[in-house]
Amino acid sequence: MRNYILVVFLLVIFSISSYGTETWQEAAEVVRKPCAEFVQSQSKPEFVKKWRKKLDERIEQRIIDQAGDYESHLRSIVLDWAAGNEGLLRCGDKEAYIELCLYIGLFIEKGMSPPNMMRERLTVEVARQLVERLRGF
Image (cartoon, rainbow, N blue to C red; front, side, top):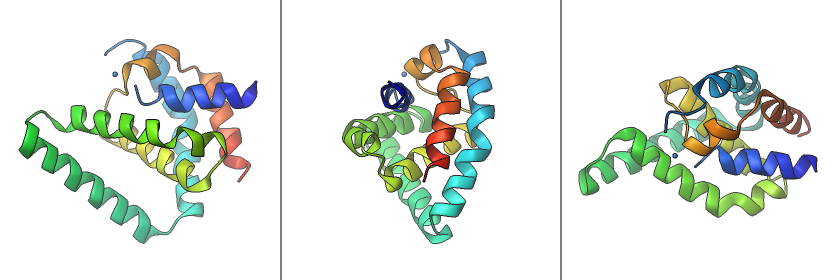
């Protein structure tokens, strides 16, 4: 059951509105530091720098090709990533969790509202479960 709730949280993080902002802010406070610490302890600074550069380049290219704004293209990329990495997250793949934490950190850093389904369903308890999962690595 615990893994199911965690997978739901991870998938919900990446879906798209302005509902449940207070819950997101509370949950973000729970995961902010543990996600940052997890990325710092489990990856190299060069990886994070390259990941961020590549993501920014992808978003910039989408803005050029399709118009739109940073937030909408980031959400689209994140949704694609979540769909393609669901299995890895279920299996507890460390690299997938690193990337998940990078995306969460980016939403927090940019002060962006996360996708709708995340805001609707994310609870502080689910955020705590993610933190426990990160501590298990």
